[in-house]
Image (cartoon, rainbow, N blue to C red; front, side, top):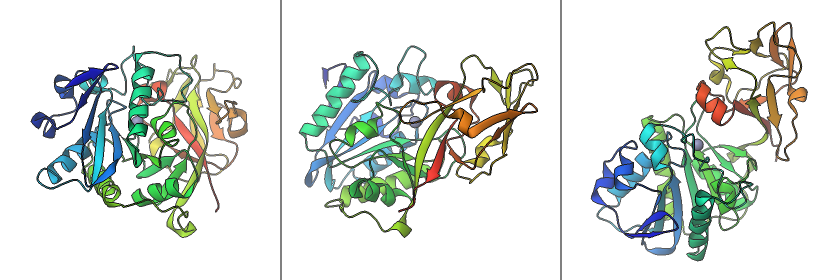
Length: 342
Ligand SMILES: [Zn+2]
């Protein structure tokens, strides 16, 4: 075991990794860990898991793959990266004193810190090894179908996304995400595998990673339009810092509509009500912020408050709507998307 740049590097699998839970993983890896395994084709597939400590599908998928290949050669070299083991111990996306491990990668707008430095090292090490493709495995906290996110619209990126599912989101925001960094070195994709703990998400991720391991190359011509439904994430919606919100507390400034996450990937019409504000809360400023890729707040174009109701002013399709109030504060309420016609 060698320690460089504050992460753990290994060239083989510790036996205990095969069964360990995400909450116990810190006993094996007290810091983020990178494991390189050889295979028939030399350029490695890079798979990162647990960049968000509560998103455990990636760990379960890696464990299933390690068992599948315990006594047969990997068709291609593979490098597994285990991210926020400290937050995983607590079942949290990140700890209060940590940056978000999916905002620290090259291209980030954060100032240098230990996490941005090891992320840079991991990226450079994989680029030096001629990384074949990059897969970052995540979960949603709300109910969503499985989908992938790409940060580029070129043929290889879209083919990689289409190999996972027909739903693909083009989301070049926010900066410093793993997928955006690796897109400079290889086709790169984020998998959103439903909610943590669902067996179907693990099975889907394993099947996809095995397909990638067996691929001799990733085709360059983009997939035919009928093979994917492509969306552009127009804006990330957050609740204004000085606005209290809740699904259950009627005294909050903003009370969100029950079962909001059932609206994910639904084409909502103008006028759809998303919640209500307490009468003492003024209609302006709006309780929500909607940031575009270039940082503009376009909330006024999407939302209005009328008779204390928060509603859409135009048709929109949300994804990643969550019922977890902590996650909404740490990350966002949702993304708003438009369909990309090809
Ligand atoms: Zn995540």
